[in-house]
Amino acid sequence: MIANPDTAHSHPAAPDAPSARELITARGGRVTRTRVAVLDVLRSAPRPLNHDQIAAELEAAGEQHDRVTLYRALDWLVEQGIATRVAGSDRAWKFELVRDTGHRHAHFHCQRCGRVLCLDEVEPALAGALPAGFRLEQAELVLHGACADCTAPPPTP
Amino acid sequence: MIANPDTAHSHPAAPDAPSARELITARGGRVTRTRVAVLDVLRSAPRPLNHDQIAAELEAAGEQHDRVTLYRALDWLVEQGIATRVAGSDRAWKFELVRDTGHRHAHFHCQRCGRVLCLDEVEPALAGALPAGFRLEQAELVLHGACADCTAPPPTP
DNA sequence: TCATTTGTGCAACATTGTAGCATTTGCGTG
DNA sequence: CACGCAAATGCTACAATGTTGCACAAATGA
Ligand SMILES: [Mn+2]
Ligand SMILES: [Mn+2]
Ligand SMILES: [Zn+2]
Ligand SMILES: [Zn+2]
Image 1: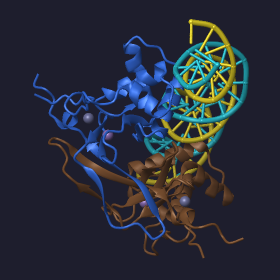
Image 2: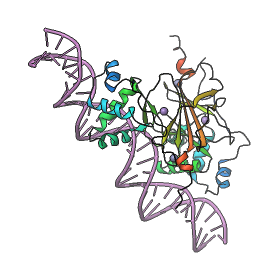
Image 3: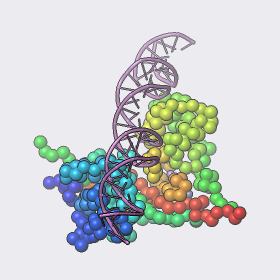
Image 4: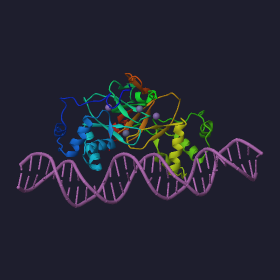
């Protein structure tokens, strides 16, 4: 059996995790339909999602959201440190919730199927130091290659 | 004195480095005006450049090149392993020549001035292993923060 | 409920890159 | 050198992903 990457490596929101409403009000933001909806999607997403994927999830749930409003909700989440952007190979940013603050992890980008997934065990390590005068604020490590699904042999016919 | 990042960390083409023409013909490509021009720009570029910056260099040198042809020349260089793409924070890819094959290095992205520069001493190191079945093909480490110029105090008035 | 200020929805625009296709050009061959 | 053909080019459209401006709606505190 081939592992299903949609569930194999998911990050279900912990039962004690703050609700969407809590996350928003804690930052003095207004609790709006779109923000709550986006947060709910991200909280149960198994991997970083781009704007389109989020919109698709919302439509699947029967919710209609303006494209620009989605962008702005996502921008706000990032500004507030609730979510982070992850660069993919296409031009579209992917978004994921910030889990334990300070927990840094790398991402794997499958060049076959295009998915990006979190490598919670792999930490961006720096072998070497920054030149003098440089201030590091964030390290981003993306590994490119083929995921387990895409290296697996085709199913026997 | 403040280090000038345009020269402080440049990668001048070594005197024995292959010429643009050599690089192209070695891959069975045709030596065209645009390919040579792009290669010459990249060979003397102090840092990864995006499409626009390359076009600007060319215009400064009095050369006019079609936008699409530039994209295609860059694509070809990447396909051939002569250049690589570096992701920036804007949507535009940056390009740099591949130096010693096998030499991997990280990049620093200054969130103040937007420049991306090569950190030849910093190697993308993996603390942790990939899950079974995953094949790694390339590691990309980008450090985000403020460069020496942008952390330096403003000049005394 | 009311006032204030934040966020939304829409239309228009910007940037970055691709696709199709007729035309030109590099370059191996005679 | 002249030919011929594949490889590149130069358009013009188009696609994808965001962003901006602004009138309107809705969340929140009083
Ligand atoms: Mn992640
Ligand atoms: Mn570099
Ligand atoms: Zn895959
Ligand atoms: Zn800077």
